[in-house]
Image (tube, rainbow, N blue to C red; front, top):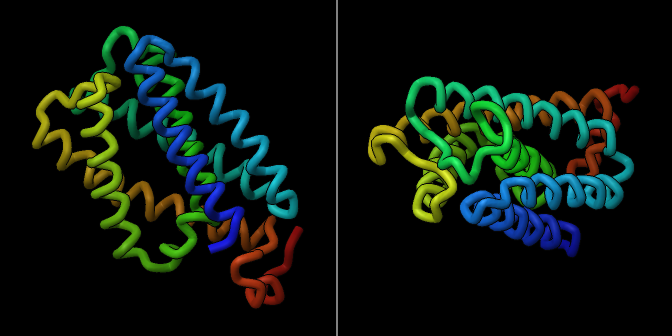
Length: 189
């Protein structure tokens, strides 16, 4: 594991904590600020892939906002008043999706092309993250068991989708630094 991968993993964890605890303690704006700053540093560290990194972050933000907003609309989750900073899905939740996107080609690259493992990892990780957010007071699972099962399913599909989109974006616009052989197989714009 190289230094950039370790930095990526640690930054992901720190940003997750800042987003969730910031929201729980009435500072829902704090996490999005740190994630945007980390995104700038992350892209600077991986300049050769700035376009696909930004596009993946935008895709993950859009997907996450849509999915979390549906979970709110269908009464699977709610957000306490002090965490509100945005409509339906708050901005700090969207920032968490961006934060995740920055791990896909880096500290979580080992999952790539293993769709069953990605789905299980996404389902378990997503459900545990929402449950932890519930315990911290940043999110409310309306029915702990049912909500967790729905989140498991949503995150299983979402994470596989993010990996598929990542692979497509990097084949179109990026240099695959983790899989150099694939650079010769794809025409890059």
